[in-house]
Length: 265
Image (cartoon, rainbow, N blue to C red; front, side, top):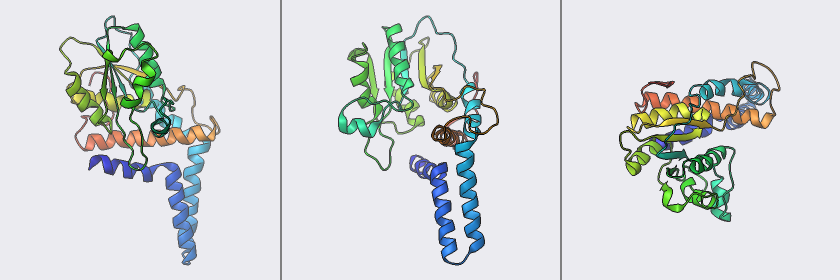
């Protein structure tokens, strides 16, 4: 139930979708003579879209998430690398059979680099299809087609293809790997996603070393207008809203212990 509620709520709270629904509500209100409601809906829609597309709001919301877990010095010994799903364009790859990377493709690129640096390390690709409406191929199904030619042999791969969200990433990976005391496992995911991911792996009893990638902000955006192109600004705002709500929801549901996890607890 949590998975379905999160997907439905996430759909409605996205800035573009919310703008469309507010405009639709304003249009309906105008058609039935509720002029004040029509104006209110239109103004709210404009403000949401303008703030998302023309200001640095999204970057300012993302940056605290990205800075929460700085990348540590690389350990001398790594027993395994876990990369969370989100690297591929699943709907395209399902049809074309390739390995088209998404805007979070840095996750898989960094995983390939780490795998070559630590040739004895196992590589866990955790990610099934998490879409409610579109048929997609999960990252665990796509990854071997990319990692194999990049030098990561099939016997090193552990493919977890059932998870639909970060909670399931942590729980299912823990069951597959059964990490032993003293082992070092790197967790690779987008920097904005790392606070939630690390907290969930800790809760699942899977100690990991955070290895954030896929940074979306420089940390120098500040408050301002037109600091980025409109499409990227809207995407940043959408990601930030989803991630902050995800943290709060996971905390309320007891799946993580703090609403804004930090290193060391």
